Image 1 (cartoon, helix red, strand yellow):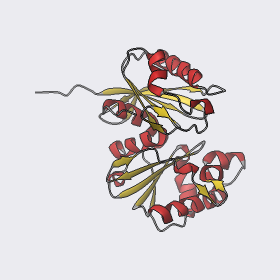
Image 2 (spheres, helix red, strand yellow):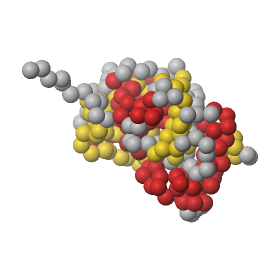
Image 3 (cartoon, rainbow, N blue to C red):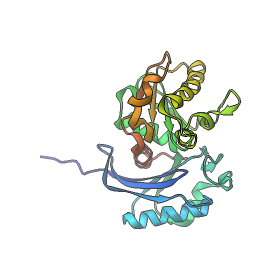
Image 4 (cartoon, rainbow, N blue to C red):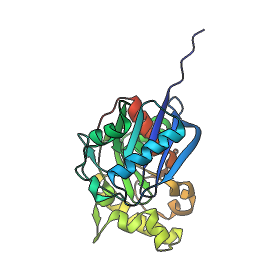
Length: 254
């Protein structure tokens, strides 16, 4: 009788409010043990974030490879935007930065919503693997991952698309809901406007929505009025960490 050795990986998700990490079972997409969470430093400069990542890995006692997500477009290792982190990130070579802090450890860096989309394809709703899927995460901002038959078109950042007179995420992120003390129906009206623009431009087969607020999809999803079916993500706010670990395991490079 042969047995397959377990595949484990470590993912770190850098967000506007917290840096989160966990050991991941890459066969199931489940966490092994507890997630570790450290408040995002202020200001969230590259060096400050790198120090937090080192602290998180030390707390986890993990010495192996690590996948890291950033709320940034990452192209050829260069961070080209900075959403909800310090603008000092723009133009930073993430490989050079993290090599200074992580030494010889293998790592990869990718956009946070892209990582979440990859995780949903691998471990979540099977509809994420079929047709043209627009995966959206609602949190401090709005992240996006465009998927065609499960394959990623990276770095879309649709939360920064202008809808009307404002960026989409300035109108309809879950942070906006909290800051303006909107009820679910009021917030869903804003989400519907934003997703309606995405629908007209991209004609997706399916929308899948993630982020912490997707846990309460039953409170706001029915208020959406779109032609395209909308489903809550199955991995929810685990997806960034899981996708980061998966990207490292699959040998993805920024």
